[in-house]
Length: 66
Image (cartoon, rainbow, N blue to C red; front, side):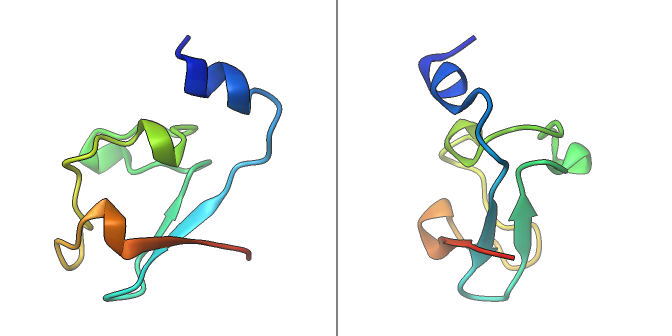
C-alpha cells in the first residue's frame, strides 16, 4: 500500500471535475474502461492520464462536492 493510500484509508471518496468539459471523475467508481479501478484515489491516477471526453490534463480538474 502506498503512502497516499495509507493516508487516505478511511477517508471518504472524492469527485474531481474537468474544468474544460465537465466530466466528473469519481474515486469510488474509477474508470475501469480506462484501466483505473474503482477506489482509485485522484493522487493515484497516473500523471499522464487525460480526460476521456476532451483530453484535458489532470491539472485541468478541480475537486468538487456533490
